[in-house]
Image (cartoon, rainbow, N blue to C red; front, side):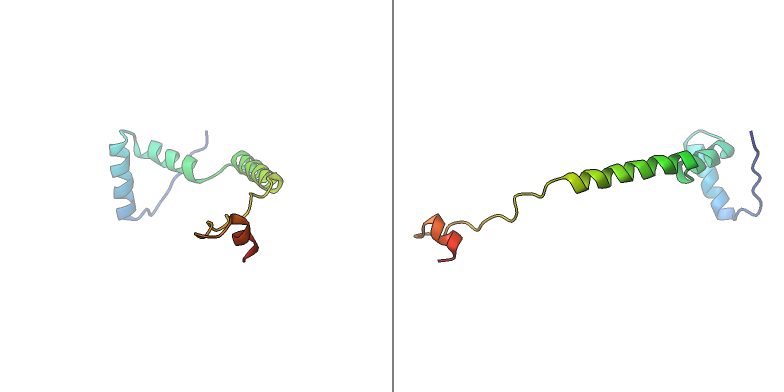
Length: 87
């Protein structure tokens, strides 16, 4: 497995990372790996996201439009057909 060395980490960032590792009861190295997994997509993950997006677009394009805007309620004293005709 490859090894990653990081130099010149800002002190406040390192302290935040150390606090996060303590909170999660893990080492700083394990915390860095978890953060990388959560935030750096692999080529396989990018491919999966692309397929999911394309499927979403396909479904959206094939969904029929809804019934349209709702008709206004009938006004008192008028028949619903008169309201629909704008009378």
